Length: 190
Image 1 (cartoon, rainbow, N blue to C red):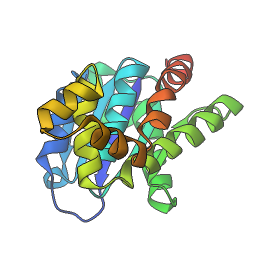
Image 2 (tube, helix red, strand yellow):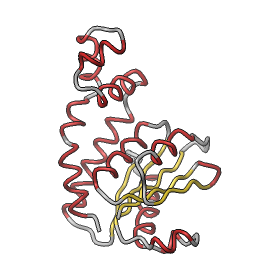
Image 3 (tube, rainbow, N blue to C red):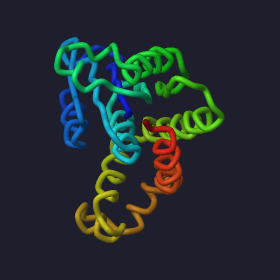
């Protein structure tokens, strides 16, 4: 399983991130410390990648991902931090606090695949966090529409304007690596 820990860097709770993570239908989700930390458990790589991207799209959040077993019975008893997946996620969050890009991923064993996945996800995280609010808005709308033309019509701007914003946001680079990231996550998932 995949445990995503999102920690607000400036201690101002942002309920919108919790709502976005919850909308991805996690097996478990909890907010602590007044909403400045969120823990979510997902079963598959694709949903985990969406959670990572949602965290990156939010302002001033770091993200730690742990891969490992999660005792679902312990979650209901408030003993979430005893599972390996949670321990790895908390370790990853601590690593993310010290990293130049506030993202890290951890599991029991180090491997070349895990190192490569971390490099790829940090690149994606960096691309997303460096976007302007306008770029984030255009990318968000483009991801739910079939074409740049539809996005342009919705925003009442030209298709060329949408294309220019998407290019500046490096959306193609980020989008084109999604399948690779999902495959690597899924290959490491327990």
